[in-house]
Length: 301
Length: 301
Image (cartoon, rainbow over all chains, first blue to last red; front, top):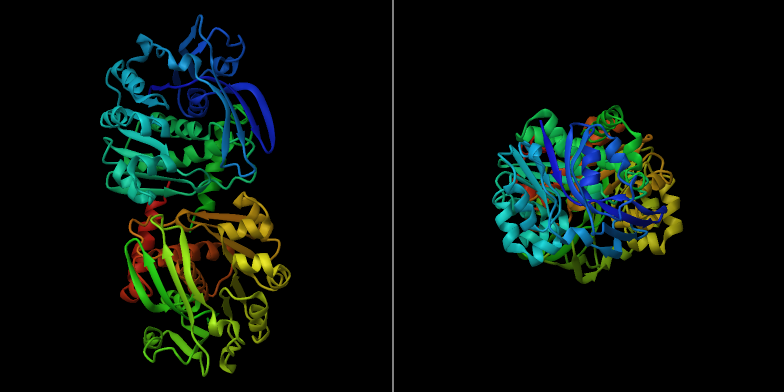
């Protein structure tokens, strides 16, 4: 089924204990699209400025599963830039520099032929903008959003209004605690699931994830990663794997959601093995399926 | 098969956000024994002072699965006491008061009829004392130990000597990082497994656990606990469930170890629902098996 993603496209500079990468392709809808493309065609909606080098988006254009009709190159605007530095403890990072640029202008347009999209992921954006995107769609079957601490703190009312209109929310552990006011993540999940129409996924990075919905809970460990070269985009790849699987299976029941988290975990585990899309560009669906089987064996008890 | 545990018996005072309990039964070999007793008979070796109230150990004496022949009531000594206070975030706690008392005297004796024990758990103690216990045993099939930050820091040489003589080590995430010098827990586990004869289990509290051994890794989430009344002793109950299952199955292969972690997780998840042994005294093997099935369903993907 048709899968659409709205989110950021960025020029990233990343420093980690295992190396660095300057001016590389990043952004939420970039990571999401590449991850989801292993499972399903993806419709990308995003915007860059006219400073974006011509061949910068080549990996996306080269990917036959990604429909780039929703890419806007805005004249007179500048592309989003982010520069981050990870600590020796790779779970911690500092933002060295961030230039939102085109991201704080008007959002990109959703092309007419994308309006019938059935599976929709609204990557992290101001909740008002996420709601605007939603307005432009006909009648999607499954709408899932991501959010961040900034909007939970400063734009709570708009965020709660958005949550009431979407099926699922994907957010990380500290965001879930912040949104719910609960330090216990199980309680947090049970609170947040009341705010959305159907389910919530709490991502815990190296500690796995939890799914709440349909009166049920599903808990997964993370795939045990030995070498994390660059965790940037792991959450977006996770969401891409999840939504890509659901769109390909055309299913939104709890069992399918649980299954999608296995794929999500595995795709993210590949992504963090190198900078930008480097690792995801090297692998195939077979690699994902093989690691999923290994992961299932590893978590059998 | 015969299962022996050496460890502390304590008079605990515990304050948590959900209540408090003063002068209640605690200590590593107490929690361990009660947890293991669901699976296997247990031989307890521990010491209290003559200040220990007569009926204080009644729950242990009443448990027909626990052989108390290794309990020493030492005249002129005082029982170990601990007073802790948990934060609103239940993963954090402060020690308000600790009186080691009899624990820093000579260790208790292992009765002659316990020397043939096949499965042995050396709960947290100075590594030299753990090694002394080991000396007193004939030829155990599986020896597993716990340790703590204090000995990793201050008694490293004795600890490393002990590790080389035991089959398995069970420790928590921060201790694993401290012992290995690795912040990545997968790397930490792979380092530590080289220090012991067979395997290491890293406990991550609400985030589950990881097993390393036999060139393999097993990862489990935690059972999603909604209400944590008192986490004291959770790690010892985890070890008790694990060793109890292994002793009952008389198996030490990787698959059995993985399976034991499911039982370990579930027994610990019951223990934290109330103070001291209160919750464990209420439940049966059927409750454990029922929750294990539920847990397996919850972690299917």
